[in-house]
Amino acid sequence: MSKSFTINAITNLKQTGSLFRSSKFLADKLTRSLHKKEELLIVELGAGDGSVTKSILEKMDIDSELYSYEINEHFANKLREINDTRFTVLNNCVSNITSDFEGRKIDYIISSLPLANIDQIVKEKLLNDVKDILKPEGEFIQYQYSKNDQKLLEKNFVSLKTGFCFFNIPPAFIYTCKN
Image (cartoon, rainbow, N blue to C red; front, top):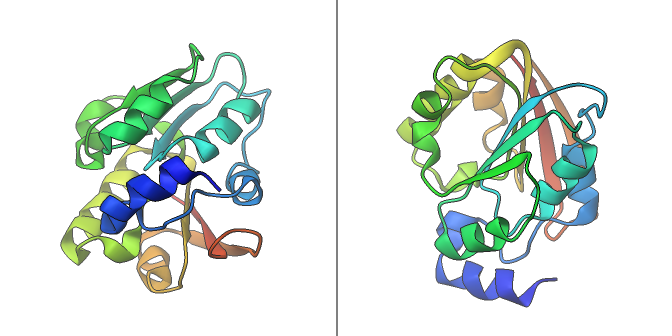
């Protein structure tokens, strides 16, 4: 457990979605699809203090790129401490994603955003933006602490696989969505 994460999360629980950072077990499950021998363009949504980010970087090829959105300034500063030339911190809102990646298609989008805390209209726009910038064979990987948004994900993607990570506080459902 990271005290820094928890203290910062308490000040804005709606934005962080949890009092605890993602476990190594959850990070490993979220990044299971990544292939080290492929050049990939990966976008992370809601990177927090980097627990999932570090797992992504470990599994990425040397020529891959990772862009991580984190709106919280404290967490963005923690992310900037990660010294890796393949990694860029985007300290702005994910609503800019289509303009930030205009003309590029993404292989993987890995999201830690607390969808349950996001307004329905904003959530639907985000999912449309995700579909627009993903490659046709791209994957959107999202975890949640409940199944509240499963039907919304099923409606928006061609296929959806559900997994579960018990070893996380709280335990989490993992959704792997294909475009």
